[in-house]
Length: 397
Image (cartoon, rainbow, N blue to C red):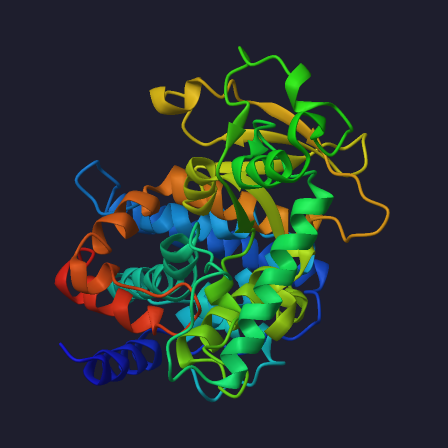
């Protein structure tokens, strides 16, 4: 299937399933919220009773919608999930955005003989969230472009600018994180080699300790390190500074703003490559962090301190890291990682793990055609995921 046909399929799926727009920045009234929650819980309970989740399912459809609401980063985000979900169920173009009471009235009196249609709408909403939000987040996490890679002969000046910005990000994050993985403490092998070459036995780490005096029996003393984006670069980056965002990216950012109102501006354009959205990790942990198998959970009582946790405690390959671990970010000159972005990453990790959506998305991308995506934001991720969904649809009525 060509990329053009994929893009067309993606546009059609987006229109048919859900056309999310930037949500209104207005919280629901207390009475509206209580009524909306009652309808929300009732609809999902009805879905489960009609179509209970089993291990044979692709992922927990109702659970994903439920957890998107539960783990929205702010109270307004929770209201937005309720508002958009119930608006989608009402499917009434005559109802204006500010007339949410009409949506509540319609769904409160929903005909029993149309419950099957209501369950289909639940599937559509859940599927849209996977296609245009969790799918792109999961697919390109752990894939940061290498700023030192040679540009092709026909590369534009704008791409040179992106390369320079990534190189600057790499330098700033390395200085802030002291050239060490923030999880294991492993020192950068590249930086070690450069300092030994320049200073010999007088070479020191960022804390002033001589390399010759380090305990070389310590596991993971040195490692190749990556500058890891917290929110995947594909969500906010453009293929070049002259290009606009793809349709998939725009849809993803709309959902991101629904989940945490206003956060898309924090990672828009060049902001996606800010130190607030990056940390230093070993290549192995970069991959696991990017796949949302590891997340940072902010400590309530200590500023800029996080508990680092794994989603799958039974995973033997993660046991050697002794999760949970703790790390405190410190710098007087370079911006620290954003607690807000860490919170979004944490929410996505929990949702992907608890619903089985992580495995579902990974299976979709195992296909070579679907899995061949670029880390610079130039790939139409929504369209590629649509191809996987068309080949491997969730069950429907």
